[in-house]
Image (cartoon, rainbow, N blue to C red; front, side, top):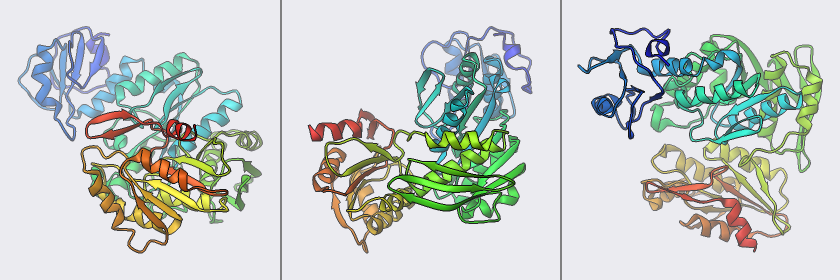
Length: 475
């Protein structure tokens, strides 16, 4: 593509030499012939410091937000916004050819997106998905590296969905992605916010900044669908700039409410009520969080013009999402569940939901990630000690932190724990210990890893699939 075509719609300060661009990148790795290099100022590195090296490696031009006194530099006001725009141009502006639904929130994004996709697919409507577990469309899928990909990868995925004949794309939109303008220029036909609890504060600095980042999603959305049972969302309703639809499992003032909610060993059921609409909803999936996630998905699709009865019927056959309340089949008379819960709110949700359907003990295996928000560790310890019967404290992704210090931070919140406590640094050994303690009617919850099939120890990413560990244990 010609450089001039790539920069269409991007305000530039310099006159630049025309060139042919075959690739866009913000990384200097190997030969950059026919590549446009974008200088991004990140947390660990300012790409402007790599600009000269990029030119030496063959880059056609440099996109920068300042004068670097380099040949064929292109100065723009904001390289992150420009990166999103040129990525869209490069792939033929695919977001304009799709109806895109965005879902943000601390917890529930993944399940809600999968539910929306499954419901649409059940009605014969092709829908792709972009998120934490995987990116998929029709019969194709790719591994997910980031919840919301960088602009170049994001628009490539969208273009593949267009080519596959998708009409819709539902995508998770993280707070970091919104802060870093990865979805800049994308118009959403609908957007949802599931909840807001403390998370990523190591990145955002404070809750106000975290909430502000989340609210950015609604600036380019036709309407917002939000959970008003969440205090942080309710208190910020006046900051949402587009038309707003509300849902609730407890408040009649919401546009859509779940009435007569039942959560038991058979799944969930409730009456979906609101705005000249009522329908009975049921699913074999478990947990109060499933009530909220289905409420969100139904409210979104109803306001996009889909029939409530067709939606309700599709909900009955929804499948569980990998690593989200995932039941692992074992040759014993107790239950083993894998869940991604890695925040205080997520851990509390899964523990309270499992309590509703567990006759015996709840045995919990969990840890906290290293090089991440430390403030949640003691709170997760408190919740584990209060709501489980046996809490096994172990590692998650310790990264470059000392695992023992991370576990000690967790234990600081467990001084008044009602549960038994074990501390086992090696996660495999912790899982095996938990399985050895389980008896008839118990539930073992492996929290924190969810869909992930690896552990990050130091700077090394090693294979670690909890499903394989469980299978090997019973063999």
